[in-house]
Length: 124
Image (cartoon, rainbow, N blue to C red; front, side):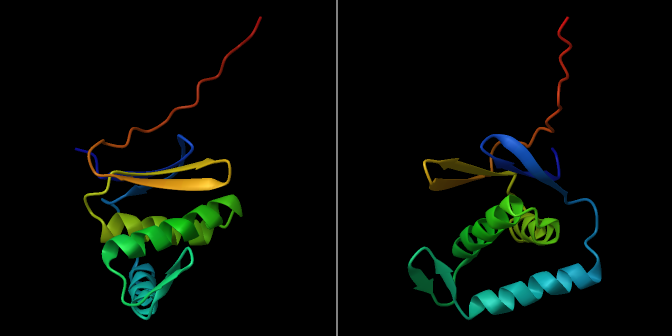
């Protein structure tokens, strides 16, 4: 069983989180602060949700993760990935798909994340 959680965008690996590596104390404190802020309420789409549950928080975090990936904000992307991996310890993959401006998110608790390897082709 792997302790690695993967984040995929349109089927391509974007981030990996290894749960066997300890999170530094200041980063764990940052995740706690995120939870405190989300407890006050979050926006998902047009909806304001007061005191969201863990699934609503995860959706909110994935929306922020997607934005961080698209804007090359590695620090925020790493924090969002850490949040998901730590707060959802059984989560194996986050699959984000974008098509025609629509975003779908799948939280995969069943299928182990498999490290993707780039294959180089030589054309002669």
